[in-house]
Image (cartoon, rainbow, N blue to C red; front, top):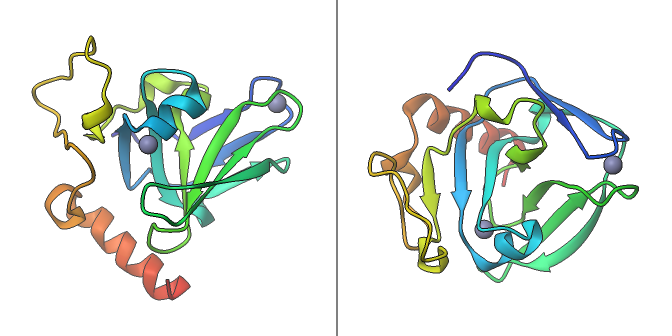
Length: 160
Ligand SMILES: [Zn+2]
Ligand SMILES: [Zn+2]
């Protein structure tokens, strides 16, 4: 991962954001919801504590039911419709999943892990050196220690 400050925004520029910390982990998610929301093969999400996402402008949201049965709020710009991040009620703490395609420099992040590859499109070949899981995974087996410690602190703080 990189040490540059990551910035981004929607397609029309009404909503800009800055990440004041590096992501906990970067997911490439190949689930059907992410394929539909992006209109593409998969989404790249930066999992990060909500407190580290500084947004200028207020995105709208709509609610889906996630694969876990818990709610999944999807945030988007009401002017241009670009989808900026998700809030998964099933995820521990208060975290956002920021869509890497909205970064000013999306090349600054790379997926640390591919998930829900059971619905990966068959023509897409994944790199051999990046972990991939049919569905989800065990955080303790995948996340670096520093990210696990940040997750522990976030959960302690938010009580969720
Ligand atoms: Zn916009
Ligand atoms: Zn997904």
